[in-house]
Each structure stands twice: as C-alpha cells, then as structure tokens.
Length: 234
Image (cartoon, rainbow, N blue to C red; front, side, top):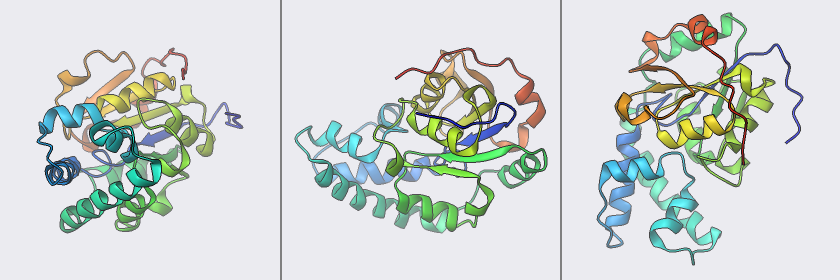
C-alpha cells in the first residue's frame, strides 16, 4: 500500500461499533436471533470474542459453511444488519464524552478517522444518523478492504487516507480482534470497556490506556505514551 502520509500528522482512528457508539449488545442480539432461526444456539460472550471486527461475509462462512459464495453471504449479512438497525435505532447515541473528545482533538490539529468492519449501510446509519460524518477526515469500511480484523488493512487504509503514519496513529477499540489488528498495523491502541473487561486485553503490548468511555481520556497524555515499535504484518 503506497502512502503519502505526513511525518508530522497525528491521527486518532476510531472503530465504530462498540467505540463511537455503545451498541455491541444489539449487534450480538441480532446475530444470535439470526443464527437461531437457522438452528444455531451460540454463547454470546464467546461469539463476540471470536467475531467482533470481522466482516459479515467472513462470519457467515464460519457458521454456515465455506461453500457460501460472497454474494450469498452478503445477502444473508444484509438480512442480519437490517435486523440490527431495527433493534438499535431507538437507542442510537454516542459513547459518553465522545463529542467533547473529538472537538478537543480537532482543536489540537489531530486528524480523525473511522476504521470499521461495518458495511456502508451501517456506516450511514450511525454516522449520518448522529450527524458525525463531517467530523472525520477519513472513513474506511468493509467495502474498502477484502479482509476484516485482525488483519491490519482497514487501519492502515484509514491512516493513509488521513495522512498519518502508523506510528503517529492511535486506535480506539473495544474488541480483542481490533486491538490485534492495530498491533499488526504498528499502532498503539486505547481500549474502551464498553463490552469486555480490561482483563480481556492483558496480552496486548500495544494497549496504552483502558477506559470505560471518552470522558476519562487526556489527548496529550495518549500521544506522550511510549510509541509502539511493532512492525506491520500481513
């Protein structure tokens, strides 16, 4: 991937679901209902740990069979995501402190990006529903990369589009697969415990802070943390 990133630009890269919005309980609920209709009874916690950050077509093939074509799994994923949007729409709201946090970041000249495994319909549902799209310098989603997390592709693309190098980019995540994707991208990560406790992220050496929401975070303290030296991998 060719990058024209500036060596001086700093960027915050936000996962969307479970991070910008505290919605993962609704995603899990919709997934469980979707698979129950097809004869699968799943453990909610195990399902989240195994799938959060992966693209819909990847999840469909894991649980319904590798024989599914991308078109077939995409149609099934559309059904599931429609169920999710119906469930979550009455509750759509940003995570506590997010508006103030990004306003302070923009004032400090920090680039803002979204890097999500969500399809375009869900990106529009969340960012346009909350009138947030205009706040971001770059957005990368499932339609922009072939592989979901823990592959680093979506974070690397978001940083490139924002004009920042991986070492100058900090990722905000709520899921282990997302933190691993940031690690593979050579990026530091901040964990929000909207879904899992801090203990779930103990093995990741690129985590520089753990918080329940954005009200607890200090921008300059995050960038003053030790830069992550991990190299990007495929």
